Length: 85
Image (cartoon, rainbow, N blue to C red):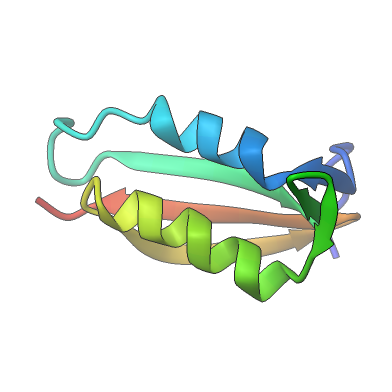
């Protein structure tokens, strides 16, 4: 497991803020990386990672960014996305 030195706890709201800053008009092939902590909350309540990722990926799909793998790290995962269109 790779060491990332990043937070192991976070908020889904912060992930969505980051995703909202992604350029939905970027050229095809544009890459985006997102660190996702292993422990997340949504509206102050703990939320399962699979539920949180469904929300995050849905927001990225709306901008034509598709999953392109991940790397596990200490306390979370670094997800990679690529813009298809």
